[in-house]
Image 1 (cartoon, rainbow, N blue to C red):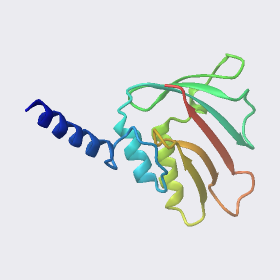
Image 2 (image 1 turned 90 degrees about the vertical axis):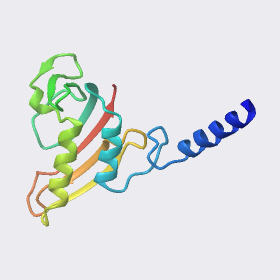
Image 3 (image 1 turned 45 degrees about the horizontal axis):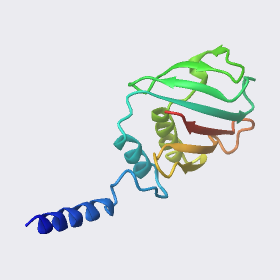
Image 4 (image 1 turned 180 degrees about the vertical axis):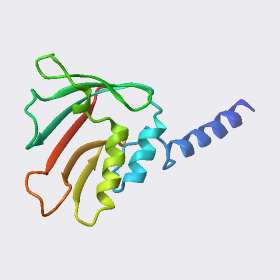
Length: 146
């Protein structure tokens, strides 16, 4: 009887581990909806990340280290030297997903995104919000610290 129970549990666990929605299995994401679903599956209430922004924007000592609260709001930001900077210079993962969707829905914008294979968050965003505008392009590279 114990052997049958063990065998049945083994089959169930094996089937579960092979399921598409198993958040422990790394995968390649090709669209924002799948990547965001993976991110939300982790249910992180607070997290820390680092961001490197390349653009024609304000000069900061990158990378920034950001602390994000449970509402997806950046609550603190520190530059590479450890100095405090305005939190609005950082972008939460939730805001990145919103921005990606907005850019994808605009005919005059271009965006390339690479998602983290485990957590699904955008690791690399290369955006040109207005194709015919000059100096609006940016690259945002993000690493989750947890």
